[in-house]
Image 1: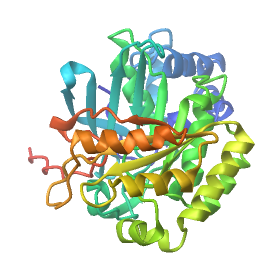
Image 2: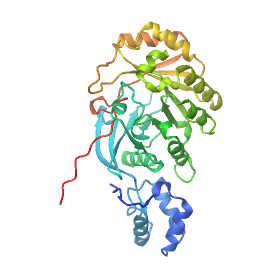
Image 3: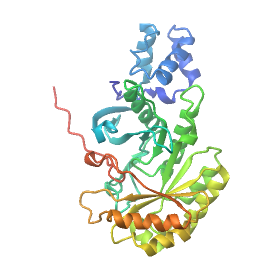
Image 4: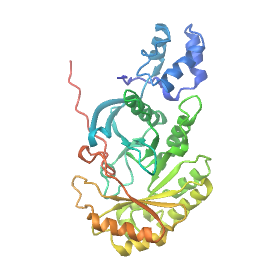
Length: 363
């Protein structure tokens, strides 16, 4: 396990390759050691600088003295669904914590097997949705580009022993990704670089509550990511009571921005809709939702609410959820009911939160 340093050393994940080469040559090492180190870091998924065996001991020590190997450290790891869902509690360098979830999906008639990492973009979340544990925990700070990238790498290292690799990334962990726009986009571009992971942005989904200016900005990035809009209601009155930011960015503006993104990128939008019993699950509301979003380049994920401690809200019955789905499908809208994963370890949608760590005993 790589130890996260508590110094001001630069993260290796976001280090400039030329700067690494200059750093090593200044210490007497040949410049090609920088390329070797990056290959070990990005392609071989080495667990530490010390594990980069083709580097000299002096080069490994020099890197460890000049760079932070990882900005996240595994504090706890829990499994559910017979190992198909894994949740990490990562400790950051400043002592704060975030949660990251890895999910394995078997091959089906509709597609090949997938392994998806659900990454966090913030410590906590400022949006304050009434049905989400993260939002109810409050907001602390944005994550850095390195802290986002290192979640991917830490999860990948954990999969290496199983001879598995990540196939998809979803920004559906803690935080509102577009509220941390620069770091999120930089992390996606970092993964995509030919000298790092060559991980296609087409396999990345950004979930957002609907921050219209940033959706518009994202559409102009020439970055073919998938967009998932957390809509959760078919009308502004209801959505504003659930999601306060709707008063600033109402449904019509959010849907218009999402459609523009889909048209520009050619990527289908998905709308996330958390099903709340007696709140947003009626047949009439399903019909209104179909009218609001339309069927062109549109998909809906229905998400029966997962339990959140202290919340009076709960999920509707299976029959009611299926009836809602049938109405959308009859309107020509592709609709799925989200498979609940990691429920018994609080790893399901809406259950992630920052955790307090017990003080380390002295001595």
